[in-house]
Length: 190
Picture 1 (cartoon, rainbow, N blue to C red):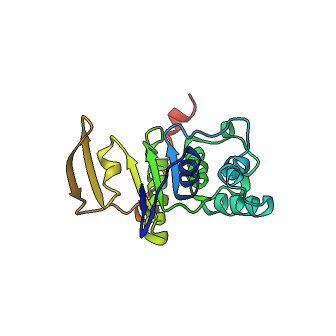
Picture 2: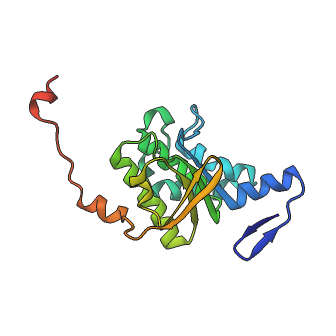
Picture 3: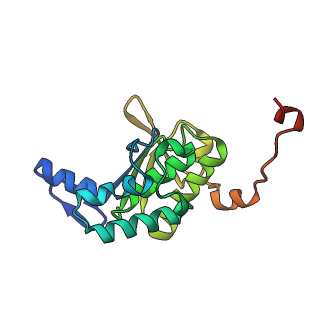
């Protein structure tokens, strides 16, 4: 039995379980799990394909989702043509196109540089603040955990602590304040 908000679902078959995962839960992985030979547009459409969303609606929702994270001009690019941060944004919007109530993210910033990590956390904060989507993610980085409202610490499979974050970091304001420092000219020539 699964509970989503006020809705309690009794799931008794593999098919019902798959349907719930497709429609209620979005998944984001450290390694992105994008289909390598498939464009960003097609990667994002995939969950809707399994849910029998009509092709025109599927395409429009995927385009809108990719545009919402600044990738509207890269619809036809394949994963190997994206940076790690861009691949993770494709992965995130793929997890969103079915309008889930819950996103489960496994080390979503683990393979990213610090700026891309903050960009990903800004997306998660926006999803939670603006759309009320619950985001549960695993991280080993204490600085990344500071972008959340609550930290659950698990050790050896057991809940060790449940802490409220007193001084939650705001990813959007941090991105606005950050200045990109160019390489010194001596390094740029190497």
